[in-house]
Image (cartoon, rainbow, N blue to C red; front, side, top):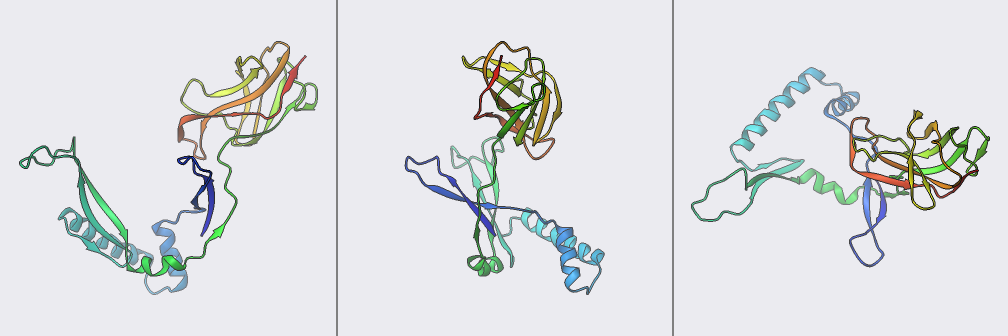
Length: 233
């Protein structure tokens, strides 16, 4: 199991907290396939049928309010919310039923012996590496107004449902000019047309809600600026 450290921003002191790096998610079908590859005693269809019946019994027990103790996990319940008087009953508008899951005997027996490997924290922010001005064939120096550019980096893709999302050139006074045409818009490369910028120095700014999933956006916009400055003559 791999983990990495991130800065703890909830304290005044400089310290770090750990995050587990999940590299894959395994579903029931994959677990069954792994099991059958080791010992092919029954068919996959039979296993699925038994599991479905098992799940039905668990759900019925939960609906009856039974505590459930299984080798993998234990299931219990709690209710949150305030009851104004002793005569008050459960109101779904102000109260909530929680189904609580805790690790069972099998997990508790092995969790302290799981080998851990510290790794470098994955990149989660947009990284702007360089901007190539196609017109002048230069990198991170010159920018040609109305010309074409190629932006390279990581997590660059411009996507989202908020109007501020976009690729911008930011002047020294903070004025933002949005790029209106993008020929290529991917996570590692963006190709587009430079707006009709006036002479001066500019930084590149990416405002995006993109995630690794095409149809899932961040709630807030992630804003990233280039470390370099390009000049429009």
